[in-house]
Length: 366
Image (cartoon, rainbow, N blue to C red; front, side):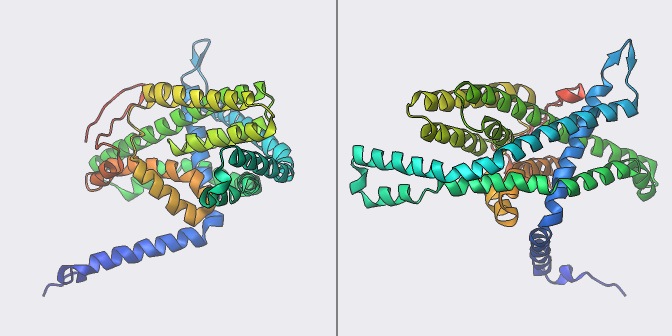
């Protein structure tokens, strides 16, 4: 006597089960966001620290490589300094920025009204209503609140990060116990190594280029004495993880502030033109030299990812959506059964991998 799976007799069974799993996972993501968002941030930082450990491992002092404990200590120190800088920027800027938001709103509305009168837009109800509904103060408060949430979750993020490092030493032992066959275990280790290399390459390159963009933009904004230049540089760093859309938003906010802060257009032109030029040079010239087509994600997938994760996790989801999308795309590409999904998520069907950070360079075309 033989038994068949329900999906063999009912073709719709698999589809219904898939939709049920999708609904359950989505519900879990929404209900558990208070724990999941800090965990995702901790996972990102964990990868970043391991990448720094690998980079420090290549250093030689008097012909000797740094010991493992010193590499982890140095990477942890770099992360700690970065977190302290971020906290100082947030704590010194958020309160004052929120209190200044109403004055920026008034300046923006006054400027918008003058433009409407000058170009007679005031006689066009649709345009007048659209401009009147722009709430600069609300946008500033939302952004400031999102960064304040990071500081509030810092303790939970630290706990998750510590446990990830404690569990890291047992990963190999668990894989060995799950797969006693040596050949299958070797293939799995090779697959995991490829995925790990690609993810570290993406995180490393994107973090380095985002940091370079933020520093260069900060210099431009400080040159014109733009208010809260450090906060806007931090925003540019975070938004630079979102291709195209993030660059536009990151340029828009400081440019708009320069427009309402100063009485002349010169600071606005310097900030808007300077930040745009920096975004173009780094995003379109420098980054592709190292990242190749690893970030070759279709804009349609980015938009859907922004909407979906933004609905589930709010501003934090909008910040995290593209890294989650790209890492998912990297993982899907390494499995034959899901490679078609990675191809659909790519912009032109071509997925190239450049792993210069790993000391090798390969190119795959799907």
